[in-house]
Image (tube, rainbow, N blue to C red; front, side):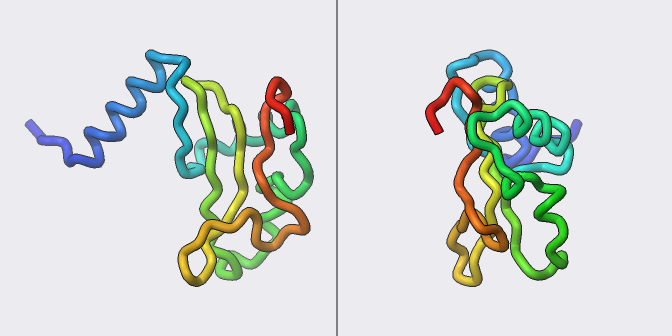
Length: 111
């Protein structure tokens, strides 16, 4: 039997808590498997723009920015998407390479 690492245990606990309790709020890094949900969320968001669209942002050369987008959940529902990158000194910036930044939020939240 394989013993899970502490990261595996935290991930399993987070996924279980997120799925079981809609009041649990989690902000986590974007994963490639989030692409379709991100795109769908933007189409129905309160303030999503072209500058939140990851396909649009992909026109930058891969090494130009250290992208680290974030996704905010309440339970399993996306509440906000936050495109961003880490600066050379490790500070999260929303968004390098775009004219505007900040989160795109769901319609029921004020922009």
